[in-house]
Amino acid sequence: MDNSKLWYFNTVRNEPELGPVSPVSQRMGPYRSREEALRAWDIVRERNRRWERQDAEWHGVDADDATGEDGLPDGSADGRGGR
Image (cartoon, rainbow, N blue to C red; front, side, top):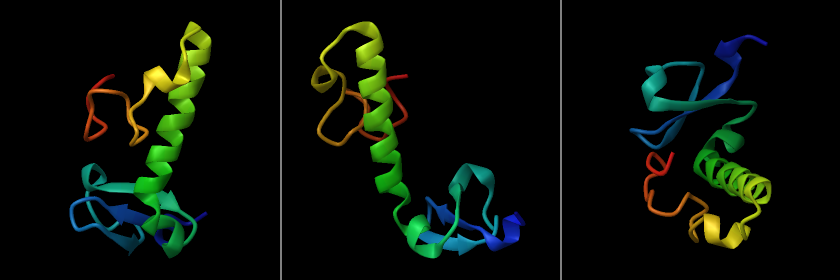
């Protein structure tokens, strides 16, 4: 699929962009629609929760102890710490 027809989410401006307009360090994606790009942070949280549950199961730990309420690893308020 042509990347210029996919959507990205600019994490600096907090808005969707059609095509890879911004530098890679400032965007998430690609996404198939504008609406999906608008959900970028929700998608990140959902994936983090799922991966933390999988890690907890792998290590035999209660999954609720592995993540905070925001779905990010405990101690990483912005999602960049903890790993």
